[in-house]
Image (cartoon, rainbow, N blue to C red):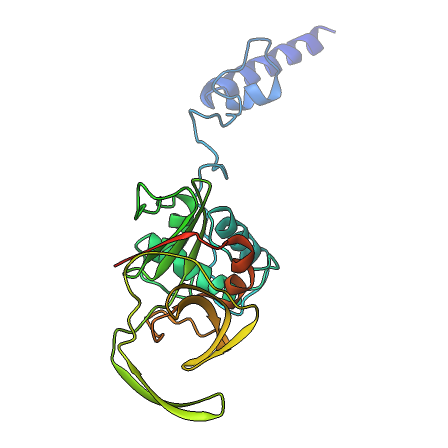
Length: 270
């Protein structure tokens, strides 16, 4: 019994020596301590230590959208344009002509060079859009304003701006054309000017109207033979291209007679 106790004592001493020479690491591992663990305890990341990335603050990279594309991103674009008053046509997730022309209108109002692509600049502007400048501050609550410089028209209803559309107006270039009208050949010459001034909507024709200088869809005349209308082939380019009328996208020409009555003031400015 004495021998066993002595051996046990030597064993404890040896363990103490090992613990001292090794800095106490092995002993701490071998013998549990009742004291609270501090330095040896695992560090739990906190907001002040190493903040984990969060989706709320991380920048969102959006896909560049172009005509012909389709999907959820395109649908989100359509809904945003619609909410801002730019009519993108049917909300179907397809980037077609109606979306392209709504994007053009938005880009022009927001000082972005018009392009069919919706990239970083356009996405940023869609988040923080500009408020369009009122051309006629003291105009009637329901009216149309046409900005020939930007090639955009604004439709106000009861004091609210409800629609912003891309347009193509007169080229301002003199023309002379030989056309066949009502079975007769005739020579038409003019200056292709969309007149500036204050007018009112008047005569209208439902569907296609054959005029001496071409076919007009759902024309709404506001001064002489000058009208808002859709065009063959949905030809509403990014530059003035008409003989003087104000061309609008076909999906707008389809709806315009229902929302734009007769006798509504039309203000054309350059």
